[in-house]
Length: 112
Image (cartoon, rainbow, N blue to C red; front, side, top):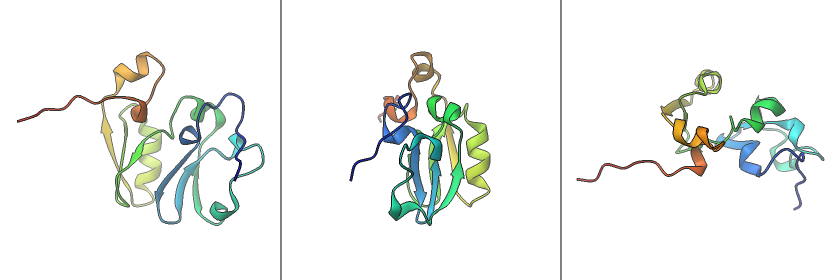
């Protein structure tokens, strides 16, 4: 399957995140030929093309209850919480400084 995206979008994970079965965060305007047919019936948390270019969709779904994202994305955290998914927020300001988002970063670890 070929998916064509708006020229301002670098990767699919910038415009689509499957939060849990039948629920996704998506920027429908970024899909030049529409979202894939298999996903059309899913419930959508829509974001704008501007939000997508600012990497709002680029988080990490850990399981059906938890989604990790940047603490700066409070709008998204509120939207997903309304759908029963807990948004765990991390300080990702270092990645933001270079125009990246959570999934592009290496997080600091504490090892014991």
